[in-house]
Length: 505
Ligand SMILES: Nc1nc2c(c(=O)[nH]1)N[C@H]1C(S)=C(S)[C@@H](COP(=O)(O)O)O[C@H]1N2
Ligand SMILES: [Mo]
Image (cartoon, rainbow, N blue to C red; front, side):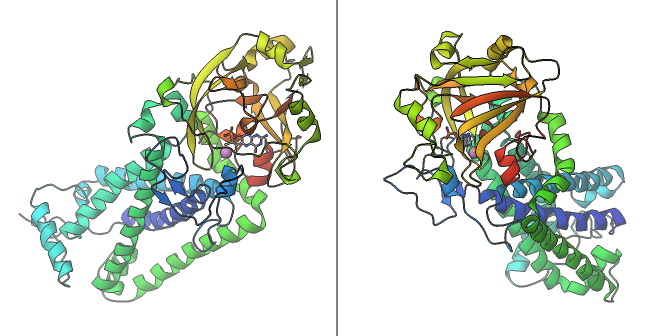
């Protein structure tokens, strides 16, 4: 069979270098996200000790309450983007890079399929690729360099093992990373609970996503080693200049491109650490509008079966009682209300409403009760299934009647944010507040809401990440805009940790 010249057209070379940028950004920001909860599980309950991998030396105390924020670690800045305790910006970098990665990969795949005979670059056309690849493998093992070309196409620019590896990375590993990534969205999970189950469960999807990253790192390491073994100058000429001739132009320009990529990484770290709000505001227009279009929707939340209720449910946010230090939330009013069995507790609803409300727990319990069994998704990475009961927020809104200008609800807590000491608050929009499964819960797993989980009342908005679900609820204010509340980002964790107001992924 005569050979087919595929060569190294400009679109192969360009997408290659863009992929180097996006893949390295994805790996380093992914490590920053992992630092938020450096444990991996095959089960969806995340009971401490049930993890299959723990990348932290922290031990939680056995004799007192600890929270999932205490488990967070900071990885060094050379490794993680941005490194340190910066889950929020790690996520922004990750989601920004994933856009670029999808576009670069899509351009590459579409052009390869559209420009004949370029599909033959990666897609095998004959079973002889298997014995060919084995022969190449044995050659490498015995310290020989197999020549380019395959039995089916002696002029192919890659050897058989190389072609199969690229095929696996682009047609198997890449979709697997995208699909397991999507499985971690609380909006997807609550609307389509079967989807994360394609991978076992929500935590198995997270574990596979991590293993996929390990696969990419291994691939990159071997790929670079091969470039060096096969001849750095020659290989760089192919991937930069598009020809195999001698000369050092390819190596020179290629190293300059790698230098530019390294500079982007260094600049990303420096800017994220010195001006986090600026980076938040720069990456937000790239990341938030598409995510909002796709995921910020009025959806119905699926119920989990009773049998899946987790018998362990992590805590995040210390109760506002005096035995915890003030930065963890101690509050005298709350303490007094709690000691009185919350008989004097009143939920205040005010702002852009026709009638302000002040409701006791008895008032709330007298209203229609709604119950749901759902999975809680903490932004840090852990999950747990719980049964929640309480009143529908929409029923309360029917009573207080928001005025036409009303757009958002501000949920204020008795407790303070552990990192800033500022009162915990979060905002959601009126459409989401009106969904039938958005509730103020006063019961968890058939008992009154425990103090660790936000007694006497907390928000449950299941399509969102856990940080939106304010515990120790003190008041709700109906407003036209959230940008003049706090630092204007939509909540205390948005203000101080660069979390995203949407909280859908
Ligand atoms: N008042 C208050 N509410 C809060 C928090 C907090 O720190 N303070 N943490 C949030 C986060 S990040 C999560 S994951 C959930 C945890 O709920 P749990 O403690 O019941 O598991 O509560 C959310 N609500
Ligand atoms: Mo969380």
